[in-house]
Image (cartoon, rainbow, N blue to C red; front, side, top):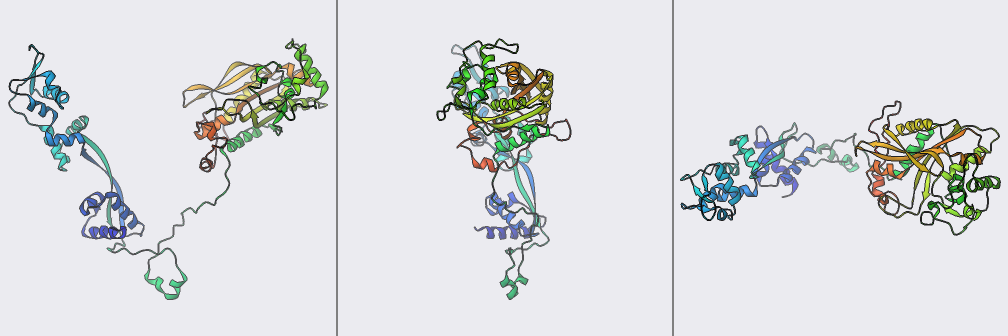
Length: 510
């Protein structure tokens, strides 16, 4: 039956009902699926005030498959009782019956049967009453006939515990006549055409009212990747704190700036091809500030500035090797060297957010390239306490207020600290970054004045983005496996921060 015909049938039945109709009862009466009737009701609602429909929920009890079996064959305890002959039956034989285990315990609790343990072949079961009333079957029969309201709630609950009844919540519609009720369905026009105006036919037609609150179709446009949206938020936080962004457009870096300038020895494992991508063309860099390079060589091989150095034969050929930068700290070293060349030292605050490369084994949490977020402050007399204070301010702007610090080791910072935050979801402390105070062996060869300290910290960009957007596999965030629909479905990103106060709501769980 077509939907229009079903809609007219609903209107005809409603015309005969003085108070209204329930959609479930109507579906049973006219022999149609309830969902089809609901569809017809929705269609009639779209015509205006022809009908009024209110959704309501009702509770209904339904027999399970086991309950239907009981109605046909009797309860388990009744079947056990009927299976016991006047001379009794061995318990082990009784338990072999389909209803033996369940029926035995129920029949015992009803005091229909008794067990005699004195027999030679094991316990024997006897009847102790001549006849029984199968109340369970009778109650289920009442439900099967649609008269379940006649049972008490306790009786229904007991039958539900025995998995003989199911409680169903049925959602239906109570429909009544509307102010414009009619038993015929007239299609509403959606457009007023020039032909209707010329012929005058518009006078006899009904027009569908315009919904001026309806949203239009959004035009197709470009979308920012989630990684770039979170990057923009981090960048804004640094700018609000008065930091200057460092130029990070050199993906290829020399080993000198990437390692040597950071007081990282040439035999360090990170400088191995298993951890770093070295460049074959051009394989070597040639431009260096030679006076600075000599001071770096001296502090590595002989020591200086209060340090013993590493005491090895420092080689210029190793420092020349070009590589894909393994961190943006090489950029920080360049900026600090430039700052040291000024005639008069001025304090500074720098930050960078850009891509770095490491020869990692690819898996769900590691890629060969990722983004590093780095911040540093340069001034006289900075201490570990200043670093902790800046870190608290930085992470508070991200919505992270519970911080802990753990001593760590880095070749170019001393002291060094790992930063931990309490994860409200995981109910444990998780690492969110690394930090430290740059070593004098790194700063003084650059020409920075005595007493100048540099505090710095860093974290990744991918990890907070994955947590923020609920992404478990980093390959779904970066690379050729990115689902573009995920990008479209995430038009905006907010690092749950409460601007204007120190109170943070719903901290981002890094």
